[in-house]
Structure formats: structure tokens, C-alpha cells
Amino acid sequence: MAQLGIDPADFADPDGRDEPVGPAAEPDEPGAAPVLAVVGRPNVGKSTLVNRLLGRREAVVQDVPGVTRDRVAYDALWNGRRFTIVDTGGWEPDATGLQAAVAAQADLAMQTADAVLLVVDATVGATATDEAVARILRRSDRPVLLAATKVDNERFVADTAALWRLGLGEPRPVSGLHGRGSGDLLDAILEALPESPREDLGQAGTGGPRRVALVGKPNVGKSSLLNRLAGQLRSVVHEVAGTTVDPVDSLVELDDTLWRFVDTAGLRKRVKTASGMEYYASLRTRSAIEAAEVAIVLIDASEPIAEQDLRVIGMVEEAGRALVLAFNKWDLVDEDRRLALKRELDRDLVRVRWAERVNVSARTGRSVAKLAPALRTALASWDQRIPTGQLNGWLADLIAATPPPVRGGKQPKVLFATQAQTRPPTFVLFTTGFLEAGYRRFLERRLREEFGFTGSPIRLSVRVREKRVKKR
Image (cartoon, rainbow, N blue to C red; front, side):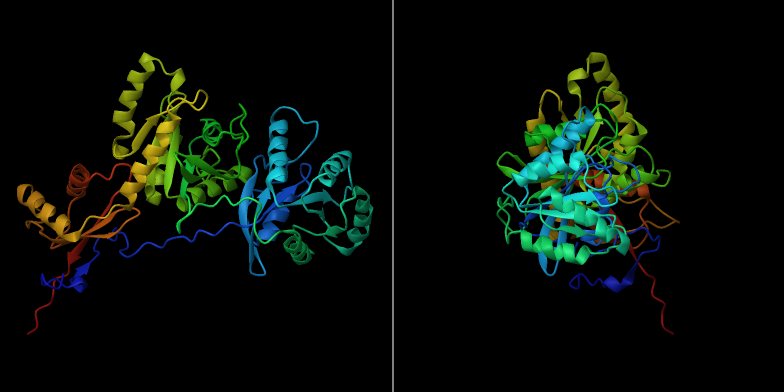
């Protein structure tokens, strides 16, 4: 830029809409850590205790039983040691229907963990369900700890002595609400956990698996698709909309590549109008999108595109993440619906024509293998960088053929352009005047025609040279 006689200090942001210029912060990917599964019957305070052990509010908590349904993993740190806490839904031996699927997830968590924490409500004592879980855990080859929760004051401590009869060793009194005894429990957890996990599911390389958020409106088939990709029952699936509440983290191998998928809660309402469990689920979904590198937005192809679909796509675009649109339930789409869907795409999704599109069926497995190539294409565009010389040479020819429209009697000139960052690709144009929104869209469209960027949003900002006051 110095060779062209351009001083960056000459350029201001008059409209206040430009994106910040600079390198994007890369999140750290922690290494493999031992896993602690937290199990127990419904409504004993498992998620409240998990939040206390994490030192932050991660698990969705509400004063009704059965909020947690899937097994959900969280990264924890205590005394310099990292480990993973897996929160589970209520475990009941003779459950049926949706609760049976929840119990199956808790059972899987116990089988794959390095240690197990059984949570019992000290104010109620050991129930028949607690004793059934204890019998299973006594036969396990994993270390087992027993936590007596809701011991909010000294008078409940004596009640925990009755829990010795479960045969799992010393019951440890703790209050998830107030934090009483949580430090002692964490120390005991570190003693029980091995230094490294039994199975290392990490991926070779410094970056780790690419992070994929699976998002969409309720009951669109997100959990079914994740289970199909993983080849196992990883998320609870039920015909009741809104089964998933917490984001469910899964390592999935597709085309010899390991991906980190996050199944999220369906977005039913705007965050501002949602309440209770739905409010916190919406916040977790937004956080999952921001933590991901690419998002798969699942849309029900058998129904008209809804406002929730557009809102989810807008959230992904606003977060600047790569995007793949997966039209699920394609096995239910007939010829009439295909024609209607084509019209809806031209009308409602015109602003994300750049997104990768795949027609799939989570139920039958149709075309789910095409998701991995679509993800790779979108991420390659998200990471793409155009050399400055090539960019300016192309831009000079384009502007010579189609100059910017006149504004205020003067025609602005584009002096220089650079790609400030990737993830998403962000371009900065240094000009002598403001560029109209229509001309910005024209430049973005031609950028895509020339350089691709399929599956990735592009951010285009303008820096206008300030007028210098002449010295007398």
C-alpha cells in the first residue's frame, strides 16, 4: 500500500457498518481427556450439580423432571487437570416410550465413561430405582462415586449415612445449588479418573476435527440425521417436537475424516419471547452456531419453507459460518412438491444462493453420503484467501467495465482492495467515496463468479478516505 502512496490512516468508517479488520481468533482445541458420566434417576439435580462442578451454567436446568434427555458432554477443569463431564437424562430400569430412549442414552454413557458419578437425592433417600442403578454399577469395572445432593445445610448431612447401604462406598454430601462440598467432590473425581481416557477419539493434527452445528426448527429430523451419520443411537428421537434440549456433541467419521457434530435444540420462538427451558435451549443453540465452523441447516422438504427456517439461516449467516442446506424427508416429496419447493427457493432463499444444497432422507439414508463433500467444499471456501495482486488486477478490470454509480454529483473511485481475513472471507475496499449497497452486492456477486466461495458468506466493507484540511 505504501508503494501506491496510500495511507491507511486516511480511511474512516463513515457509515459505521464496516466489519473490524484483523486476524480472526482461533479457538483452542483441547486434547483427549478422561470422561466422567453423571447418572441417576430423574429430578435428583444432576444438571444443577454438573453446572456447579463446571463452575458455569452450561446444562439446561428447570424445576420439572426430564429436562435433560440426551447424553451431553462438557469440558471441565479442576486443579490444572482437564476432564469431560457427560450429563445424562434420568435413568429408570423399567422405563417405556421416550423415557426408555433417555435411559438408553444414560446406559451408553456409563459403558463408555472412565468413571461414573451416581447422584442421589439426600432429602428423599435411596429409592428402588437408586438401588437398581447401584446394583448395575457394582458389577461395572469403572470406578464409581456416590454424590448425595440437595444437602443445602448441616441438618441434612446425617441423612446421607443411610446411603452407605447402596454398596458404592462413602456418600459425599454436596449442594449443587449452593456449592457446599463441591470442592471435596471434585478432588475425589480427580482421584478416581485415570490420567488419560480409555479410548482416544481425537484426530491427528493440530486443529482437531472440524466443528459442525446441526440446526433447524423443531421436529425437522436433526437427531435422526445425526444417528444416521454416527451409525448409532447418539441422540434421543421421538415424534414429540422439541425432544433435544441440550446441544449433543458427537465425533462422527465420514469419508475417513473425523467431524465433531453438535445436534442442537429446535428453534421454536425468538430468544426474546422464549421462556424457561426453551429460552436456555435457544441460547445454547446460538452458542453452538458461534462455536462451529460450518452449519448444516436442516429443512423439512415435505413442507413449505417456514419463518423459523429463514431465521435459523439468518443466524448462521450473521455468525459468519460456512453453510450447507440439507433438505430432509426427501422420500416424502412428490413432483408437485418439487415444483413448489423450486419456487420457494427462488423467492425465500435468494440471499443464500451461494450455500451448498443436499437433498437427503435421514429415515432411509438417501444421499447422506453427499454431506461430507458439501461440508469440505463449504469449509474450503470459508478458508480461501485471494492474493492481493490477483484481487486488485481483477477489480481494476471490473471497475473499468462497470464503474460505481455517481453519488452526490461525484463518482467514487476504488483505490485499493485487500482480503483482510478468512473465516469468513472479509474484503476491504479503500475508496474516495461511499459505495451504494446495490454496487456492493454487484461486487460480491462477481467475486463469487470469479473465485467461487461456494458455501461461505462474504463480508465486504468500505473504507472512505478522509478529506484533509489544507494548511494555510
